[in-house]
Length: 216
Image (cartoon, rainbow, N blue to C red):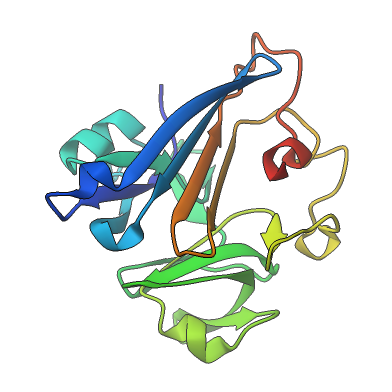
């Protein structure tokens, strides 16, 4: 099965890294919910794109194996053109280089070393590059981020659940409430990253994985 052209991988960089993440699975409404908690300073966290330049697509398993990743998840969005080639859409900055941007301020995560940022982030295109335009934080902070990847929508901010997603142009009876697999990432007060992946078996499951359920 072909998957996203972009993944977020976590490669152990310390001998003790295996002891510094926890993983468990929950079953809810016939869905499997995978939950990972880890110490980010014990991992090399990288954005990796498909090596197939013709299709822009590659399986998650292949990318994880090639990069010897301890943990790998899909990240970001992509579109497929009429020739079957996938390209990144939304906010994306990899290893200090901008790849794509967005004029819609949608949820985004940025990181560099031990610093992590979350906000609604749009971009302005400038000289074949982009500048970050966050809604609730300083642009200078985002400029320093080595990696940035956008999602939709921002679910929690400063410990409070966000229920109004209109500024991200994410409406009810659409992406929010329709049946989709879901991936979310966040940071705890003590600096641990929390990753949640909710499986959606489209041909089998009748119940949906809503964003309300993911927030909970």
